[in-house]
Length: 272
Ligand SMILES: NC(=O)c1ccc[n+]([C@@H]2O[C@H](COP(=O)([O-])OP(=O)(O)OC[C@H]3O[C@@H](n4cnc5c(N)ncnc54)[C@H](OP(=O)(O)O)[C@@H]3O)[C@@H](O)[C@H]2O)c1
Image 1 (tube, rainbow, N blue to C red):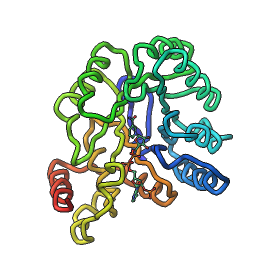
Image 2 (cartoon, rainbow, N blue to C red; image 1 turned 30 degrees about the horizontal axis):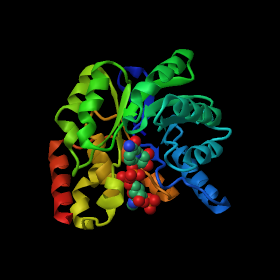
Image 3 (cartoon, protein in one colour; image 1 turned 90 degrees about the horizontal axis):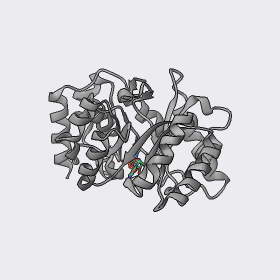
C-alpha cells in the first residue's frame, strides 16, 4: 500500500488505516477475537506498519487494540487521543495509554478539549521520545478556525478532520494551509460514519473506475479522498476483517484525476 510522508514530521504512514470508534468496544472473548482478526488484516500488508486511530472516548478500544498488538507493536503506527477537561485527568489518560502502547506515534487532542492544559505535557513527552508527533482533531467544520490557529502557531504536527464528497469544508482553507505549513492530515469519517455506504451505485456505474484498481463503492469513496495529495491517510472504521482488506486495497495508485473525482461526486449526489 502507498505510504505517505506525514507532512514535515518525517514519519511515514500507510494511506489507509483503521478507526476504532464504535467498532473496538469488546465486552467478551468473541468481540476480542473479532477485533484481533481486523488487526490481523490491517497488519497483513507487509510493506510497512499499519495505522490505527483510537481514543479514551471509545470505551475500552485502546486496551483492546493494545492487546491485539501484543508481539507486533513495532508493526503498528498508533494514533490515539487525550479527551479530558483538565490537565490532571489528561495526564492520567495519557500515562494509561502509554502503558498500553509503550509509545504513541501521534498524540491528538480529541475535539480540542482542554488543549491548553494538554499541549505542555504532550510537548514534554515528545521531547522525551514517548510521543512522536502531536495532533488535534475535530469533527465539526465550525472548528476549522481553531485548528488553523494551532497549525499556524506550530502547536501541532498533524490534524484529523472530516472529508468526503458531502463534507468538503476543509478544501477552502485547511488543506491549502496544511500543505503550506507541512502539517500531516488524517481524514476521519471517510465513509460519512457509514451513511455514504448505505446505498451503492450500480456495477455499471462503478465499472469506469475499475482501471484505478477500485471495484467497490467503499474503495471508490476512499480513493476519492486519497486522490487529494494534501491528505496523508484515511481511517475508516470497520468490524470486519474482509472490509479492512477491501479498504486497504484502495490505498494504491493510480489516483483519480479531477474528472473521476467529479464523476464520483455526481454518483454520490444521485444516491441521496
Ligand atoms: N473527533 C474525532 O476525533 C473523531 C470523530 C469521528 C471519527 N473519528 C475517527 O475516524 C474513524 C472513522 O470514522 P467513523 O467510525 O465515524 O465512520 P466511517 O469510517 O466513515 O464509517 C464506518 C462505517 O463504515 C462501514 N464500513 C467500513 N468499511 C466498509 C466497507 N468496506 N464496506 C461497507 N461498509 C464499510 C462500517 O461498517 P462495518 O463494520 O460493517 O464495516 C462502519 O459502519 C473513527 O473510527 C475514529 O477513529 C475521530
